[in-house]
Image (cartoon, rainbow, N blue to C red):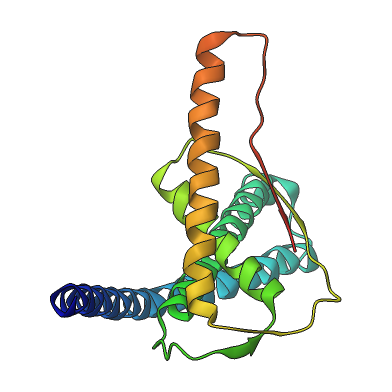
Length: 198
């Protein structure tokens, strides 16, 4: 019995060490990504403002149409591109922040936590992570959060890991079902939807 317990504890220690190493690695990667992302987002915002100023100065100067007819569409195209860069930059920034939140030093202590916030964060983290690996996968996320739930005494990181596994399993099942339905009949259409309720 003592030997079995010793082996079980050794396995637990190894698992804890692995999780700690993974947490440190994730934190390091997230921190490294945060600085370049900040530059991308800041310069995208700055360029958007400059393009607006440029368009307004053309209008204010009453330049002839022969001069502006080629420049105006280019400014509009650049503005659209900047908007897309900023949109995806902010999405990436949100993912990095979730990674940092997920990998922060884990005390393993219970704390009063708003479960709705935990579910939202880990749902976004799981979905963006899955879509990154499976580019063609698309899924509707339908959420219903009960705002009357009081804070719960939980270990948020542990609950987060459970939620990520649940969401990833759901996404994987939907991806597989999407493959199978397209092979079976052309008439049936399957639209993946994940319904999350607290």
